[in-house]
Amino acid sequence: MATLKQIQSRIEKLQAQAENLIAKRSTVVIGEIRAMLEQHGLTTADLDAHMPKKRGPKPKGAAGYAGATAKTKGLKATGKLPPKYMHPETGATWSGHARPPAWIKDAKDRSVFLIGKPAAGAAAVKPAAAKKTAAAKKAGGAKRTVARKAAAKKAVAAKKTAAKAGKAIKSAKAAKTASRAKRAAA
Image (cartoon, rainbow, N blue to C red; front, side, top):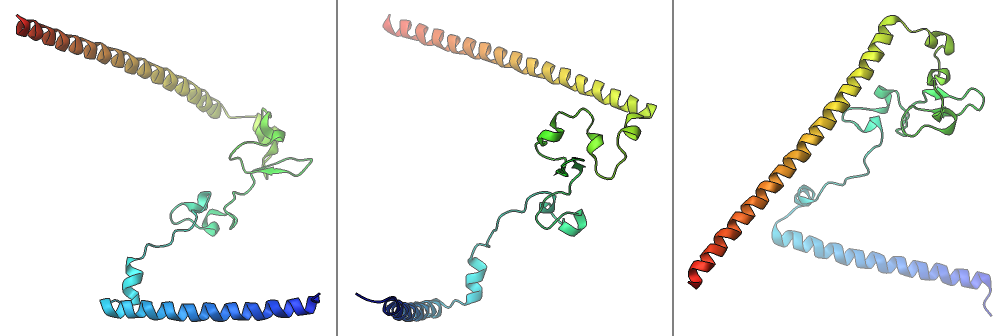
């Protein structure tokens, strides 16, 4: 039975043989490629010009926008957004984007969890102009919803009318075909 050292030495010899075979094969292939390039009058620059550019994975987050860098956007190099909210007891953070975590999901006033902002006192007292703006936004949203629903109803009515017109055209064509068939039979 072979010892461990004998087996390892065999493995090293086989690996050296494999590397030699790979080197010989690659020199043969490179020689064939050079011969083909010379035969057709091509250069490596021609190859580079006709090869598709490599496309890596697209960057995620705001850093993926044209001209944006991690430094200019104040982001980490990983593409993650900086935290905006923090749980005071656990220290867990959330950027304010994507799905909210369980600890802030059901909070009525998220300003309590803002990082570096005054908590409940300043957030509770809103100026009158801000209250009016919020009410106007709410009303505007309701108006847009009503307008969207009305447009959808009009689109459905237009489709129904078009379908009825299509049926009428089909029935008129069928009547013409039937009358032609009667005339031909007579």
